[in-house]
Amino acid sequence: MRTMTCRQLGGPCDLEHHGETADDVLKAQDRHLKEADRAGDTSHQEAREAMKGRWRHPKRSLGWYRDTKAAFSRLPED
Image (cartoon, rainbow, N blue to C red):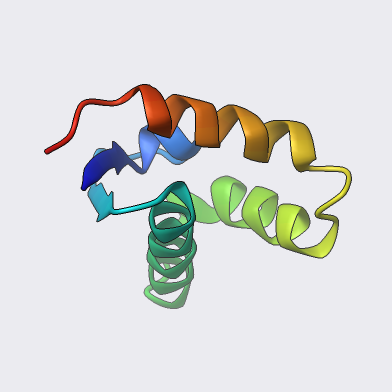
């Protein structure tokens, strides 16, 4: 299990996401951004739009995805 924060994933806060894989953490970030958006938290709006764009255009976002997976793999185990 490893941990990445919202900020490490392009967001504005230090909420920690834990997961066995980078995909687990990315999905947790996506849920967090959706919840923040629903709650009216405008500080997360830019990150939410960026995440939505990555899900819509995965080929275009492959570099970001690879970089995030590499950063996750370099993290120490929790």
